[in-house]
Image 1 (cartoon, rainbow, N blue to C red):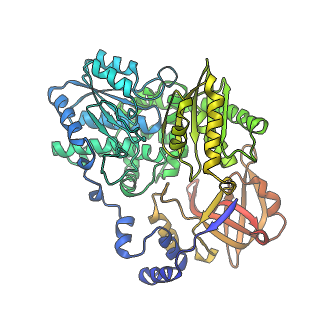
Image 2: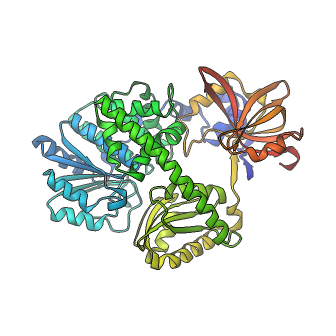
Image 3: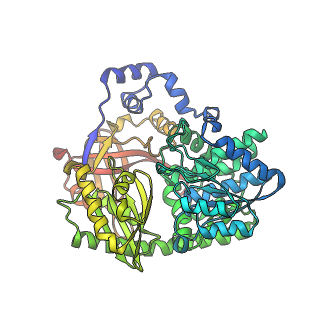
Length: 567
């Protein structure tokens, strides 16, 4: 892995250091985040709820609010139809909870991933008819559901789309479309997740009804969870939402999310990373392997006994998902070795009959991380493939799939993650077209993973003020990642330990001068022999607080290790 240490302007670093009366390493981190003055620092370090943008700046918001209020006033049923992932299910649950608080008659529906596919479905619209709903609100889906919206219109059902995926040039014939990525939408922040867009709708309704945030604040942890899981940038409005949402996790009103946190082994202060890696997989498993309506029910129920039952189901489902996923990962690696031309092809497109479509997204992420190139994983069944794609920086998946759309039955998503459907007859043509597009867009240099580091530092730089600074710099996530540093010429103390179920991790102690700290290297067991040579090493790492069995300590979470002479 190539290391790239950021080098902000030295005069700027010196100016920040003097202005903030702080250390050079802190000044460099601030410079890298474009926080140059105290005026810029105040809103960043103190995310203000009042700085959220007016929801009525979003195109069609006034139409959507008026239409929903009409149903609320006459108690006419409203159906919320959401996507089956974390963002969709948490956003759907938040809409249900809030609209009920506002006096609405609300029900929800999450389409079956296997039987109905992604997004707005015919079966979902039929369900709206059955419950006598004349208004359907999508969450995290619907922006390209042209035929389904037309079908709903034929059934005398008005559709309000809330989505954040990239729209086509043309938009569906819905009565209102809330999506900040619409070309004709001037909403100031484009980085909301699906639940974030739903939250803006909730906020607009509350403003119109003169209801304070405190009355519906219980939905904030759900929106925070969806924002974290959807890997959107934790900047602007997302930072404000997540900052305040995280503070409410210790005092959840409904039992479902509380029980799920306990099952995930989480207590005390919760981080974005913990939500992504511990909580989100359990929710995603509900839709990947079964009925995602269970996730929404878990979040909205007030019945603690039912919540425990649902949380246990999701936990068991997640364990089953892990086994299925690992089998597909192993087969995908074998396919790369057998079929891929890693020297000449700058993308990977893999497909197989029998792969579970519910895990292809995670598998695509793992293959992409290992080989550092855009990856498409497709589960084939009865002549039709359902696939997920994951990208690297600098390669827009949506643009790539649009260039290959002649070979696809359907597609949608973001620059970094997307979904697609392809027939087995057109698979080879799609594969060639996608790889050709990647080869034209990327270079050999793009195939080498780069680890961007904020600054060189010494262990002497780790002070109480430095740790407090790292704490205040959060919440972390895309757009505001935890600072990564480089330590040069460090000494390994004692004998490193290989840890983990399959011996994939390292635990060791590192010393520089009079200071020493414990270090952990996840997935770095291949560096073991380097550490026992006795030679000095350079370490790329983040500094974190480790809580274990009631004890708190500082440790280095290592990202990469090199012999000092090789750096």
